[in-house]
Image (tube, rainbow, N blue to C red; front, side, top):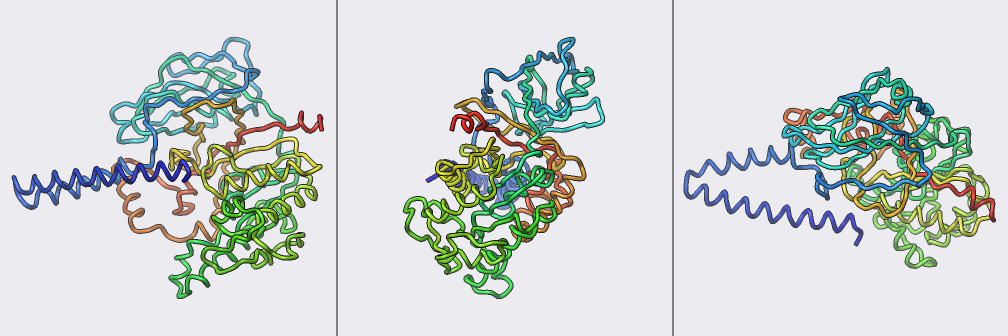
Length: 476
């Protein structure tokens, strides 16, 4: 059982226990006072829960985030003078540098009911970055895109429903422009490339997208159209396979550079455990990857048998890496992203790289899911992406934030809107929760679409974690 599953299991157990205690209290109140009072209290309690306590947060908002960065990272000296963030005299920042600012954020009492926000103002590029309700600890703001304003001494930080405390610490990371490279994006499912890296792949010199699974399971939406479960799964997988080939064209990536491998959703761990044994689809009654590969622009060697095995997956990745010769590979983060298909996709790429003659210069890691916080990035669409929660600094990390213009964000949202998996309407419970949070917690959702990913990923930054392999390549 994964860490994410353990956290969810503990959360649900605690929630059931709390509900049992509340129920007993309401029974006592109804017996001692009057029968209708518990009903009123129950309704008010449910509304309060939906408004303020429904976020899946598996750590205390009072915990410090803990990051360590490589010792050679630049640390320009900064001071928070009232609301103004000042650099030491004579210090200038590179415009496209990734800037990370650590400071302590303490929620006010209102910040337990409304999302605490740090507002960045003073230039032509204002931003807002939100944090957990009740936050009281060290957090890491993303100041990428604010270098010019900060260098001119005009950047202001203002806490809304929170206070900014202590002496801030700034890190500046400088990288080559990865958009000038040949980029290969590994997407465990159709839409993962768009969620994580649409801004990157749509502006890169040359981009390729390889989607590992068809994503055919959980096809209840298509069963409502009158299809049985097998037909619905096959239709959903076919649509998502088409999405993985067709939608990237919106970002300038031709069909000839998009490959769907057609392995089956949530079966990658089983394939990894028994590398020679086929792992058929759980719901589509299929054991042949070629069913979902029919939109591919060229055949792969594993098309000879279409067997959904780990060894075939490694062979596919090996063949594609040698064929594409990517300078940059974009793939899921091995520690941040807990989804089993994302974990296995990353491990398969690393295993395949161990056998390829071609080696990329750089790996860029992304996280479309988190273990600890289902709401990250917090706040509204169109705002900045602060660093995600990390409660232990296991190893130095190197963030890279790519800035997206308003036009790029709009195009990214349109790409997501074309993805069939993000189109179905939300369940009534979630719609009610949003209405309650809009009224009582002042939360707003984008007009682009109802799915939560429109809020979480249509942002002014795409955040990656850099692993440089150029030194390793030179020694080979």
